[in-house]
Amino acid sequence: MGTQKREAAIQIVKGRTISLMVFLVSLFLLLPIPLLQAQTKPIVSMPPGSFSALVKHISPSVVNISVVKIVKGRAQGQVPFGPDDPMRDFFDRFFGDQMPKDFKQRGLGTGFIIDKDGSVLTNNHVVEGADEIKVRLGDDREFKAEVVGRDPKTDLALIKIDAKGLLAAIPLGDSDNLEVGDWVVAIGNPFGLGNTVTAGIVSAKYRQIGAGAYDNFIQTDASINPGNSGGPLLNTAGEAVGINSAIFSQGGGSIGIGFAIPINMAKDLLPQLRTGKVVRGWLGLMIQKITPELKEKLKLEEEKGALVGDVTAGGPAEKAGIQRGDVIVSFDGKEIKDSSELPYRVAATPVGKVVSVEVMRKGQKKNFQVEIGELQDTGPRRRTDEAKQGPNFGMHLEALTPEIA
Image (tube, rainbow, N blue to C red; front, top):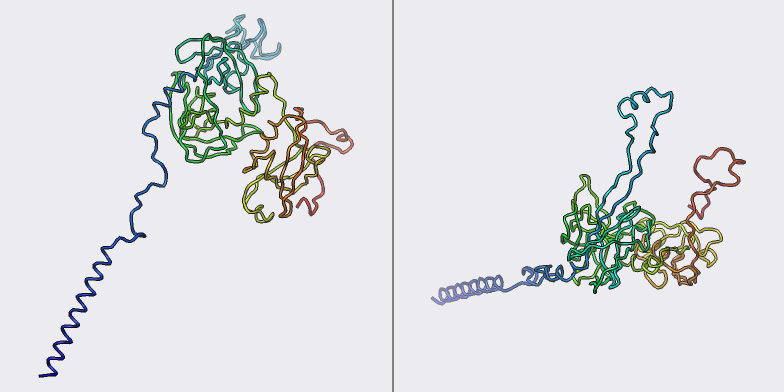
């Protein structure tokens, strides 16, 4: 009997132990586990519910620009064929003396007011070669405009209207503070429809699209179409952070790839645009982008800066001591994140100014004081010794040294 009682007691204890384990496992499964919890706090702040307040505040400062260009026809009596050309008889028979005359070519664009005196910032390609420029304000008042200054290299232009009364100006922001993913708003005159608002985000920065030596575009998916050129790209504070300039399109319409000139580039050039002449700074360097392979070879911590590929003999950089193979990481106190930043920073620096240029050389930081020279816009010059060296094959050769390699 004693043995039976002990076995019965053991069975009761086992049963209670199993029940306790089942209870504990069930309780553990019901407890919240941080790693398995759904994230309830958003990573980013909520997007704005509406841009209407921003648009109402900014729209009066955005203007529509219409231009007229006089395209010259052929002189009276002039024909495109020589006297012995068999096509001359055919041309004379059907056209006779009815030669093409001058005609007006019209164009549309956008701009935005940047001060109360009537200065309007837009693209150079909107007003270039125009014989007549008209600006229509948001209240439908229309004024003739005069070109104050143009810069084809950056596609920027400053025009001016003489409007009575106070004009609302758009504040200029800081495009360097833009981040990929930030909300932006574009206002323009697409296809002549008048002020049209689109919104999107910053898709990329420092884009080079082959437009020129100073490519440094902001890419956005906010719809930009023909006629939007020169209009503002705005941040959510209502500040202009870019000037809408170009689109990538195979059919002529927006496919969500638009490009804007950073407003900081315009701010740097505005003092010179107001004088009507742009004079560019010159450093005397050839640079290239830092790639992952170059980063490893040069023992850099990040893919930032501009690699000096060559130094112009007798130029400002050489005189200061900068050498081929140096990596410029800072110019005039501003970090160079991408090689495309350096050309326009140098170009916007006043001639004669002494700036600090920080470089990485063989893993060591070095600082140089460089006096900025003036960039001379001259065409390619013919080598004086070209005739002595035989035919010109459009290239210059030199020995491949270990330093160049």
